[in-house]
Image 1 (cartoon, rainbow, N blue to C red):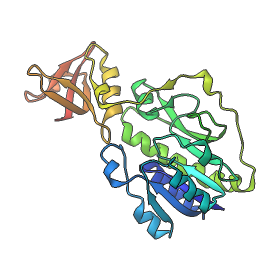
Image 2: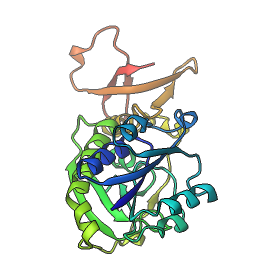
Image 3: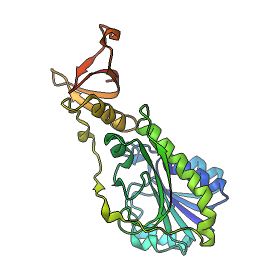
Image 4: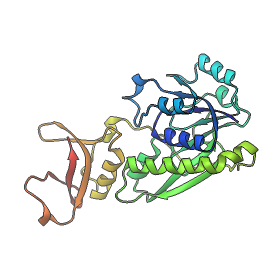
Length: 276
């Protein structure tokens, strides 16, 4: 089974390693060029993994250009896997492999379809999320579902640790279901995508902290936007922008130190643990 892999961030790297571990024959990897690294949260270089496994590697800004469509047609893969790629893949590419094109979304679809599913789930205070393996269509996150794997969002998790859980869960799904996709026995479960809203992408300006919210809401907001994302922020009295990476809710003010930076919220105070 010849495979083409499209990905650029850490979750894709973890899933691709699992493809190799499952003896998948990855003919080529399409990833982003280095000059897009700063604009891509979680960017990782796939070249060492490609070299180790003798897979061709192509750095592309637009996977949907005629040049790259023709290149994939020349490879003539049996399956395309898209993971950690933040752009839609055109229908012409999706239709090239005879076994279809599969993708991963870091939520239990159809919940949190759209952009930034892990960040939104944490912001909304979810205690559980997961990852979905599904067949890609030209529309975002609405193809038939192959399988899902759930896991908890713990109170000490942040966006990085939840993405790590998602990546490991995706790797487990690949090991279990890649052989079934190959022999045609993988499930195709209807994805009722129209029953849930599509969440929008988040930009750095969306990280402004609203201190009229509860301490728990702010705690969730900060941990959802911490590294490798741009971070939550506020402006001090001198209008300096303070980026906040980690906080804690103050339940016992007697433990506060004079040098602690503490801010008032709707119900409790919060102490800034890491900020700049």
